Image 1 (cartoon, helix red, strand yellow):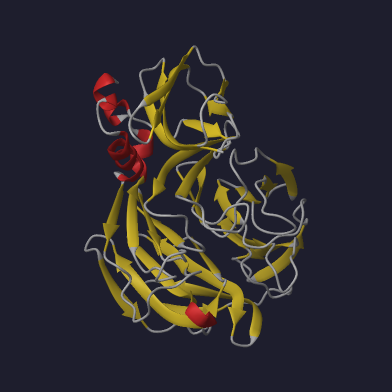
Image 2 (cartoon, helix red, strand yellow; image 1 turned 60 degrees about the vertical axis):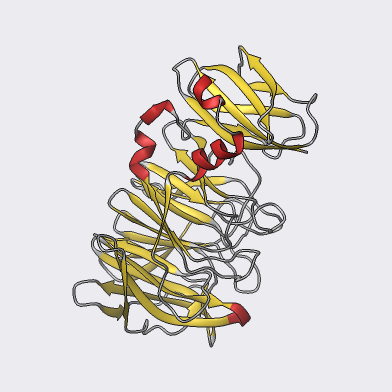
Length: 396
């Protein structure tokens, strides 16, 4: 611990937050970038298609990514037409894409992609309202679509049966209408929440496929958010990036893990740069790939590609860990709550000049920081299990 403290705190923050992220080759397109790309992976290949760019221009182009070569190849355009606010998923070796907004308005279509023949098949349209940025998730040989908007927000919930190419309406989402939610599946359970409706939400709900029923789960221990990306991996759900309570860019590309066994959230290392509006993600082997999305600085839309090794979440290299401790709220108005299964031995706070300004022992689940001035700090947490956690803290 003492050796770590001797480092410059600014360097330490960069090391802890970004060292697990690696930048790869950009998406090769003629534009500055895109937001709302449809992204999915099948076996060892990632796919990126459609989306929007500056001026509201809609895209239909289609690319595949070879992770072993860090190389891209352009495929024929998506036959469903140029669109944005659409989503995709994979199931049993096929890709599925649908919904969004095209040149003729809101869409309710569904397409499947065969990676072997690299061909698309039009499936049955949903007998529901066409919509932009809905939840779109595959589980239990089904695809679930709901929420979203067609000018006003929606909360209906639909099930597509892959085997019979048919749709059925299910129990509505139990909370307020919203668009651009986050969603993922874990086993046979589907999760949806957050998003933008009458406010920016931070709630999460579990949909039980077998009973066609919803249960409210733990809120995200941070501000509400909208318009990021999501995925599931190794029995847990993940949300990444997006925008916060004011529908403005998050200061960082926040990364959170949801554990259904404990119904709890933990914060992971942020992706480099600020939070992005509507990026895309896909997973190959144990690697997460993040691309595209809007940022507040020029160019407004990105086309870069970043890689995060998810296997690092399940190792304990150098005793520096992030996924098992979360604290909130951040920004804080003077108090801080902890959400962890570990025993906290000591909490240390440094300012951004590297000066230790507070050290607290015998921590339970809350500390008081009212004696500190408003500003930006680094918080360091040491546990009884000899693990260390570092994160940026903002006091208002």
